[in-house]
Every structure is written in C-alpha cells, then in structure tokens.
Image (cartoon, rainbow, N blue to C red):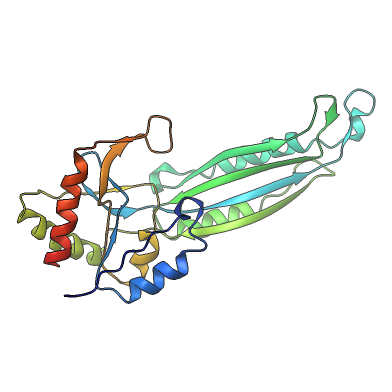
Length: 243
C-alpha cells in the first residue's frame, strides 16, 4: 500500500529548467523512480545515458557595404566559420564525446557585410571528466579576424547516467520481476538524455525506457508500435507491485 506519485512534465526537451527542482525533490522521497521514455527497439531499458549540455555563441563584427566599403567591414559569418571548425574538432568518438553545431543565424542581405552571427551547439559526453575539457576549450575560443568579438553562454545541463554498480543492481532486480511475467528484460543505453539523468546522481534507483517502443524520434518518421503499449503497461504494473 505504498503511495505512487505520478509526475508529468512538459519541459524535458528544452532542458527541464522548471521541472528539475520538482523531479529531484520527489525522487528523494521515493524508493524507485520509473521514467516513461520510449523503450529500445528490442524492449531493452536504458540503463546508461550520455550527459548533455550546450552553448549559445555569438560573433560580432562590423557592417559595411559589400561593394563600396567591403574592406571596412568585419564579416561575422566568416569569423564564425573558423570557430565552427574548431568546435566540431572537439568531438572525440573514442571517448563518446560529440559536439554538433545545429543552428546558425547571420546576415541580412548579400550586399551587406554581416556584423553578427550566432550558433547553437549541442554537446554530449559519456565520461564525466570530458565536460571540463569541452567547457574549457569552448570558453577559450578567440577571434581570428581583427575587429571581431565572441560571446559565449551555456553549460552542462545533465551529467551522464553510468551503468554503475547501483544501476546494475537496480536492473537485476527489475529483470527478476519481469521474468515472473515472461519478459526477458534487456539492458542498453543511448546518447540521448532524459530526466533520469537528474535522478541517478541522487543515489535513488531509477529505471528508464519503460514507455512504448518505436523509433525515428525527433523526425517526421517518428512512430510507436501500438501493440507495445499493453506490453509495457504490464511490465510497469509488475514493477510497481513487485518492487
């Protein structure tokens, strides 16, 4: 007869800045946290996740007429191009670290030397100490073109969720419960982040990826298998009753 708390949040995709406080507070009051992120295609739970953060970077230059005063301008887009190459080169697949410049804005019309350019950078890390390397390198970026400047904002949003001894024990208990309803539970992981990344560092058992099964996330091809819904509901029910 233990109480069950249902927390529905709406800001996970934009960083959980508002809901994080509530997630962590309720997690600390709980014996187990179940996260209804989609399951893997084979039904596996997500027992490890990369950490994630990002940067908003703005370069400012000097506007000028592209025909009559080209030499007086300082092209912010040109400067940003240099910075983008430096940022992308920080990616290290061997360590599970990736940087992606996913958004860029700059300029107004083609006959004006652009005086501003901005980018949004997504960062994913598997090893916790990689964030220090990335953060230091990004904040150390210097302009290459005279007369330009760089402004950098951002930071780490969620640390990695490792498959450590605590997670291993949590998964093994869940697997034992699942076997009682004929489910052979598997463990897997992903480079995506979720609110489970906030819970794991608190030392609270957490199981992630209990939602419906599908693929194509964040694209027009996104879908779930309808027949996976009752299967996952049965698994969720078994975990709630058996924990």
